[in-house]
Image (cartoon, rainbow over all chains, first blue to last red; front, side, top):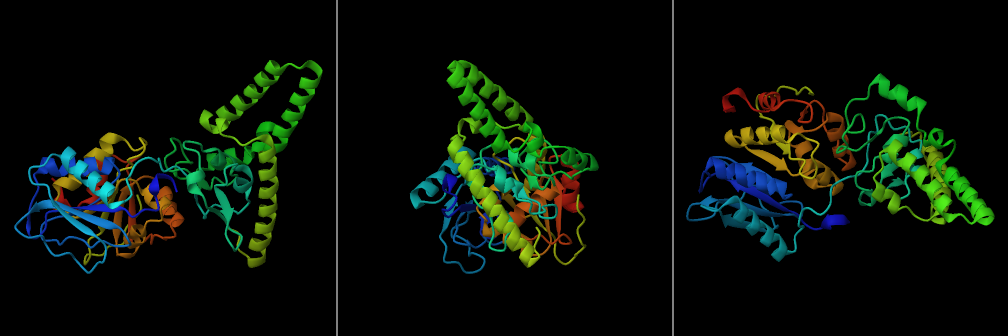
Length: 289
Length: 120
């Protein structure tokens, strides 16, 4: 997984409960903001509370201005808990201390991956499998009962919302996308009308996208043999890709990382087969998503 | 904003999403909401990024959903609900209120999230 997502996480408790003095207001805000912006989860425990327990295989750092002894944790936990006194410490120094703790203990070091991946709204999804057929990066898969699901979210190309644009039901969200309804805003009747008119990427390129790519490849080959004009063919391909890029708001980097044409054809064939099998399984179990 | 079933016995847990890896939530809104939470004498959980928690299927999401009423200050309710869904966690719509920092003002969020006596 990208960014060490499978490693245990260090959660930080900003502790002002029993056995600790309150933090200065400015320090509390600066520390919380800095920890969050660095990617650490923060739980605030105000006056009268006890430090939370570490849980779920993750570690816990309890930061505070402690009296002589460290307070008792709430509940039992076998997970590591690290108490650190931050009295008089700047937010930068406290965050650096937390970062060192992660490094020393082999814990997940946050950052490094912008969490960008499709999220399926199963209230809208009809299990049509267009997303499975469309995505070239194996983000989508099918559950044992034939339901479309996101199986490899870290394969998704950052800032690329293309699969959501081929979904005829507006059922694929990218919560960090700029515009609705892909960002998760409510779907309006205008959105539905637009979807019914569109994309079906087929309409965009006058047929199945992979067929379009194959056709263009064939045309290019034909031109090569007749004219040997590689520059012209390259220009043609760039024009096609630029149109696709603009229409679907796909980052240029995604095009740069597309598989070869042979691989695309193979993926398309496999995806179609999986979709047929999945739809058969879903129909058999009555489980349209 | 989604409605929350009244439960005077148990104040809602407060969950704040910083959306740390993106600029889609206006910085002035998320900063002002955080500042108000910090000033108030309330406990809360602040996540750097709910999307990341969803991606790692963080067990904490299940805790948030299962420990009684909660108020989540994040982004679009449909997105938040299905981010939890993607982690295998179903939010109880009667128990969980989702506030949208992409659309609402900081004042409106704070008014919803903090009891009157806790507001500065």
